[in-house]
Length: 294
Image 1: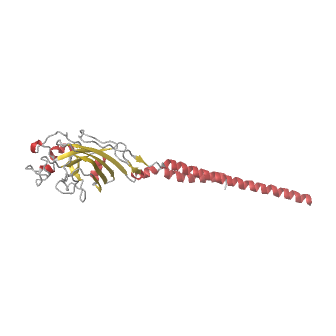
Image 2 (image 1 turned 180 degrees about the horizontal axis):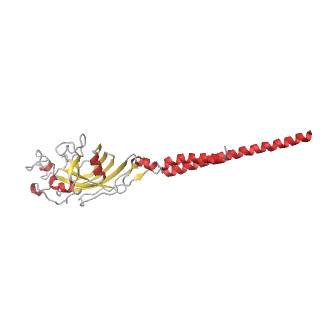
Image 3 (image 1 turned 90 degrees about the vertical axis):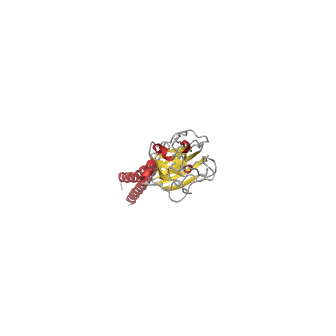
């Protein structure tokens, strides 16, 4: 085989290795991406309550946690839901409504945060049907963390930053239970105290947070949208790290290895040719000597 043919074949081999690796980012991105979101829940109805939300969405799978809760009524379950629609905002902490004592009811702010689409229950169903009135919600200031699947249209809205988290339940008279003559605007079987909104926060997409899911090792929120400053402390986000393996660099390395192989082949070819040349020279000497002897 000629040196020219060896070079052509080696170059083709390098290209076969390098091209798939160089196009790896596109292939990785096609497997799905993760969007990270966060929110600071701030008080409504002058509760003084607050909390922090972190969330990640991969396809239709939502992972959401609520931490640093403060000011929720101890011993009572607090319904919490993701609402979509309206102006994708939270009402002012001091906004009044049509409830008893001019309290803001849930339906008084539908123009802000829209209707319930997801119930953040601790177990079982997570649809809007599992709203206030069941016991499958965090009690008091308890933290919350759960992963579950949401409908495709809901996932699209959340991914676009159009979700609002609202927690309900206010013990206005501080008697340790939800009671009172006023009935809920969401469920007439419940007192208004059980369903009035206590805190609210917009799920904001963290800047530059959408990355290939297969290359993301750890991530978290960087910033969140706040409507008002809560009385309690607010948790900040944490940094995002990504896989340091660079497919383009791997492609360059593969090409270098292939070209190195070319060098080895050429060196062996050169050594082989030199050996043949030496053998031919020795044969000429022997023939000459034989002629002289004759």
